[in-house]
Image 1: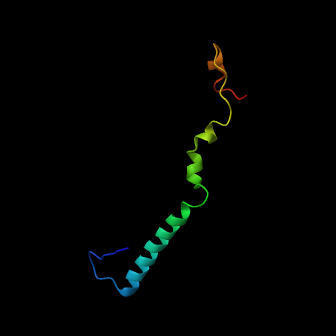
Image 2: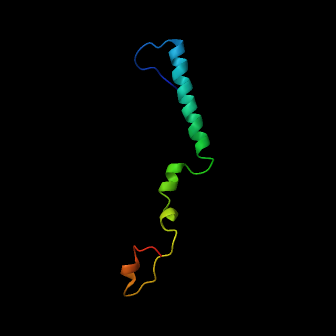
Image 3: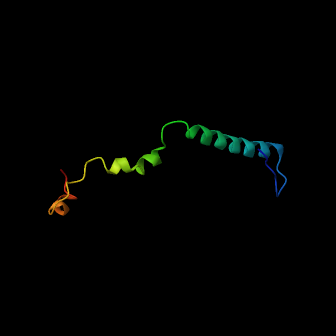
Length: 69
């Protein structure tokens, strides 16, 4: 990993603090993909919305679409 200071003159302590933040973020991203899905992924999971079967097709199926079963 290459980090370049483009502007300013940071002290060694400031540079070490910035590098520690970048490394911690990279480590958390690396371990995040290996475990269970993130909570935000569960909200976008289509299986969460379609837990029940849809009504059988027929002439009155439109009236049963949004009524609880």
